[in-house]
Length: 453
Image (cartoon, rainbow, N blue to C red; front, side, top):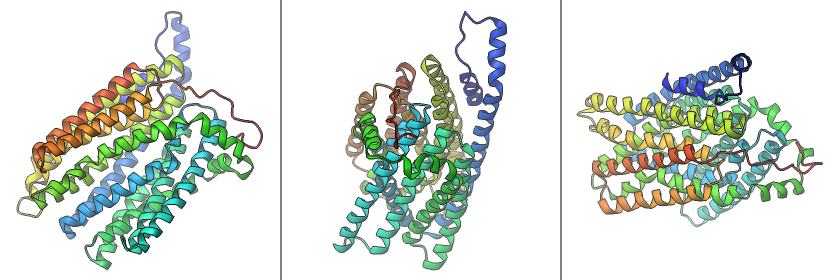
């Protein structure tokens, strides 16, 4: 409720002495329908994500019952690798969708991102073929990895496009579909092939494919308007590549460093002297990743779409109020998770997952900071201080790696330490969002002719 009130306040511009009371009333009245529509869409998006993640949690818990702990460690590594490799697929060009409300620039950025994605996936396919020929990986595993990677890249592109256009319903429905398909496939494949990591790999890939196909169908009219053949031109793509050169050279390294920080607990798994604790950390990461994704996929579209509709001082005003709302929402989500895991962890006593409640409670600090950071990071990509943010990512990653090496083994104390580092990184980006101007600084004209949208 606190987050909604703050976001509602953020939808109104800062007060100005020049406005008469009647003018202010007319101003507010003209924006009430848009405000109600936006908050209603956000509420429905939140409900869809809540439904999707609850379905995923139950499927994951059932799979955890049937699978040995080391299978989840392998699945965590597979999922992290597929997500990591999908980040450079679009060269972070999806981030520029929100720099301007001009649809012609959105269309050009979309076509440039598609071009980058196709070229990147072709290179990955060649690399995987070489790796398979060398005998380093099984052909079926390579195929599943490529399928999962491709689906993730497509979803990243389509979610950004739908967010820019304000279609929150399509985003939510695609996630509900994935949450329905993936756990069911996971259980079916475990029944067919046994409790093996390959079953989890394939279910993950097919779940992402189902969501991507659904979103492609739902957004087909808008996507065709952005990417119809007559709009493509080498001149337009070259202009866009020059105009948004900071995406691959600054935003992409920042995203990769940020993801490296996200998967830092996995880096500590090889230092585990207790294999059960390593498996518990891997499972806790999978469980806590769900509310983290839910937080990001609900708050991210709402905040970024709001940014695209504001400019100048109103945009900075929106950012500051939205930041307060994000802080309240992150605390409201992860503090109850930590308390609940600590209080009800005893239900796993006597099983192979005994102690998982305390691990989840400790790691909630890490993921709470991570959830808050992710949305603030998307906001900060629109500021003019991205090189400084890139430096902050590098410092945070070095700090967490140094902490892991200093402890020398996986322990609860190490998890506490990485949690506080995550909270400090989120605090730094709160300062970035609050103090740095967030401007729509893409005002150049798209080349006319075949490249215009």
